[in-house]
Structure formats: structure tokens, C-alpha cells
Image 1: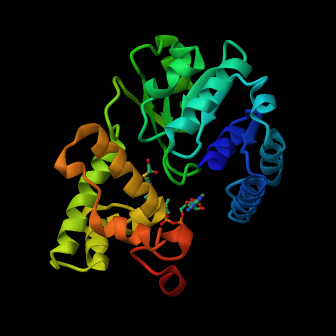
Image 2: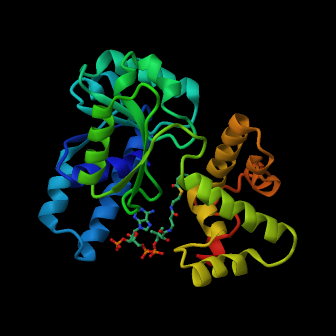
Length: 275
Ligand code: CAA
């Protein structure tokens, strides 16, 4: 998601550095964004000049120390592992300018888990985007006990300047708002399919045609990635212990088979054949 968040910032006029420890990851990010920009130009949604200006505001770096050295604002979107996030926040606390706000895009870890490591807990919060980040309007801004009002106001204002519609979550709760709502729909969809009441295709069709959802729950799980869905369930279940939050066996089995959704070509649906 980091590359699409970065592009949103570049399109809104901010000089933005995409940092990743993997050079392959950076190459992939650059290629995807260039291809997205070309399609937007082709659809007359972006002028050649605006696209060029946005791409010029973007740069790519492997070294976090150097990337963060002049940053006013950092949005961390690393893999959902607490040890990795803590080490990133520890490093950012040292190398980023003292005024810089450090936000995490995590959907499963409240920023209180990384705030102390940064040494500037008042300037840390969650800034949670949605997939695909260049398209989805919602940004969940989640404060923890020590996040200052000034930080919250700046993060909300920045999200608005990126063309998003930020919502404020006043205290940390597993799943925030969106994943709690999404989880409820997914649980019911998985239960209906598991009981043989309807096919996944018909359940998805119902969500789209009866409820006006842009995608059905199975299509959405494939888009988000079944590994991510499984991880979110495990993380929430570990925090709440509530039976309804437990990971779903069918999703876990697909993950174990390497069927992760769109990104692996197969999940609930087979993208080689159907899409
Ligand atoms: N990356 C960037 N842009 C994309 C994209 C992608 N992967 N997929 C689609 N788009 C863009 C298209 O370029 C198109 O842009 P324009 O309007 O500028 O032309 C626009 O989205 C619409 O795309 P399409 O016409 O191809 O298809 P669509 O109308 O069916 O929309 C969709 C696709 C935006 C993905 C839509 O189906 C949708 O909104 N789905 C629900 C997505 C959702 O619920 N996301 C939240 C997931 S939960 C999460 O992310 C949080 C978490 O913690 C896991």
C-alpha cells in the first residue's frame, strides 16, 4: 500500500520518498505507479503535465536513515510485524527531524505499540488507508493515550489535503471501524457458504446487487489478500479472545495452500480463468 499512499501524496503536491529495504520492491513500485499514471492519462483523468509533476515529486530510496532525515511526515506501511515496526519507529525517532509526525498505516496494531520506541509518543498515531489506496477515500486516524491534539489535527488535515475523508477513532480498539464492519460481513458470508446455503458467487452477487457494495465479500477478501485477512483475524482474536473474531478455517486452509487471492492468481476465485 505504501507506493499508492506515496503517489497520493505526490499528486497532492508533496515531495515524497518511497523507502523500502528491497530494491525489487522499489522497482515494482515505480513500475506500477508509472503504469497507473499512464492509464490515468489515457482516461483523461490526469494531464501529462500533472502526471509528470507528480512523478517528479516522487523519489525512491533503500536507506531509511537518509530517506527520513528531512521528512516532515512519515507514514510507515511495513509488513504487519511488531518487531519490524518497533525497530522502524526506533530508527525514525533518531533520524527524523524532531517536529516530524510518525504515523503507521497498520490496521492491526494500535500506534501505542510503537510510540514509546520512537521517543516522541505525542507525535505518533495510526493513519490507516484502504486498498487500493489511490482510490479509497477513507483514512482512519486513530489516536492513542499520548497522541497530542496538535498531531491529530495535522494528520486529519493532511488526509484531507490528500483528497481523503478522514475519520477519527478516539481510542484504540482492535479492527478500528472498517475492519470490524468488514469482518462482520465476511464472517456471515463465510458461514453461509460453509453451510452450503449459497455459492460464493451468489453471495457476492447479493452483496453487490442487494446492498450496493462495490464488491462481494469473497471478491474483497481476494483483493485484500487472504494472508492479510487471516493475519487480521489472528491479531484481533489474540487481543479480544472473542470466538467471533477467531480465524476462519477455510481462509486459513487457502493461505496454507498458497492461495492468497489476486496477488497469487487464485484465492476464492481463479483469476487465470475468471478475470
Ligand atoms: N490500484 C489503483 N487503482 C485502481 C485499482 C488498483 N489496484 N483497481 C482499480 N483502480 C481504479 C481504476 O483505475 C479506476 O480509476 P478511475 O475511476 O480513475 O478510472 C477506479 O479504481 C475504478 O476501477 P474499475 O472501473 O476498474 O473497477 P470498479 O469500479 O469495480 O472499482 C474498486 C474497483 C475501486 C476496487 C471497487 O471495486 C471497490 O471499491 N471495491 C471495494 C474495495 C474495498 O472495500 N477496499 C477496502 C479493503 S479493506 C482494507 O484495505 C483495509 C485493511 O486493513 C485490510
